[in-house]
Length: 224
Picture 1 (cartoon, rainbow, N blue to C red):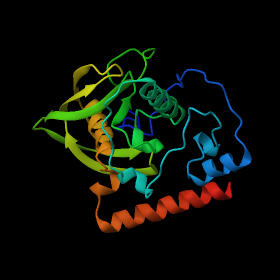
Picture 2: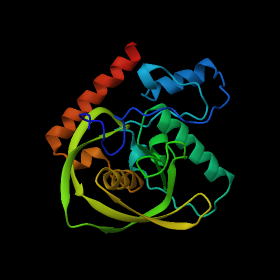
Picture 3: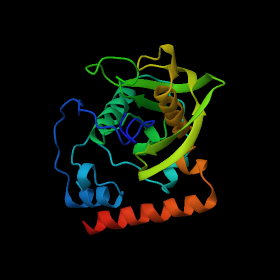
Picture 4: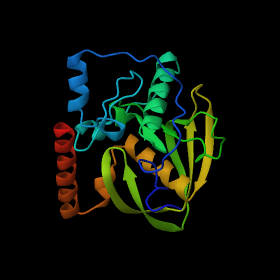
């Protein structure tokens, strides 16, 4: 295991970009500026002009705390959200991504297929309206990173095993039990749907330090 790579999801593991090719739309200058102001800049600091690839919402953006809505109708808009999340997750080399991280207050997150026990050629697994059914008695602590906290790693203690219940893109109910990294990823991503984020696992001093570091990150993006 590489240091700080297999973390609950989110930013550190380099995985192939398997997102389906989409038509690239050249945005007008004002739209590109809005992307720039959104703090993310994309991989290697570049602004992504692909419509399906969204800027990542970075803390302390209040959208990360916004109450998410239950998905009740499984239609084309749900498919479109899934595609946007998948393309964005692969673009930023994530193991998982939640809808609030692209500014959508819906109860959906994705997990990279290999982490979920599938083939690399399979699409990411969608978890819609997810509930945590059970958590094991054994706990472990590991550093976690998050796309919404670029460059930040926080030690988080979580159950080694968890079982969740969710709906897929057709609205069908399924359960998944995960151990180790998968359990950590499931719980981390589900936290996003309840407004719980990485800084909730640290004290006030560490939280202030993270805020200053992210401000520096933002300043560097504007300066590049």
